[in-house]
Length: 207
Image (cartoon, rainbow, N blue to C red; front, top):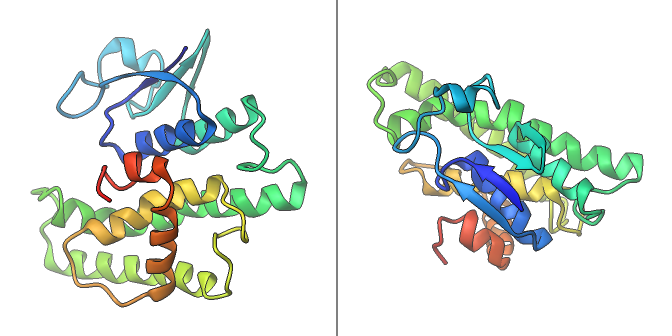
């Protein structure tokens, strides 16, 4: 059985859990990360030298990097509805997945650490203001894209891009801050919330 190593509250672990829910894939999960077993332990670092969650074990195969894990699971189980095989359709999905990991997530990092984690290293008022502005700027990109009338980011079909972006949108709405009114993003969030896997793993179990 697939083994997922990482605590269930981690945004990157939750991507993988939601992907498994969409596939209908059974798994075992072990708690690793802050508050649980340390990812700095030699046992974990042998699997992922970055010391980050999640890691999966699929038989003898070990893999890290959450978006790559999600792609792998869809390919392994031939879920071409979630990750198309046609080059252009797949590129559209992967474009948004890469944007989520490389651009959107980095835009909210400082604000999240300051406002949710109350991190002592993230208490500079100017940096927080800049971080919030950057987060708003990137969420506005998603807002404008969703205003084209499509239900999901790659068109009218739910894909893996919506799994990874859905976790980031959840963070946008769950962080205690003043935010602009982005009606297309809000409607998108509610569409995602019709999916049982998102309720369980994306919205922290909150309907």
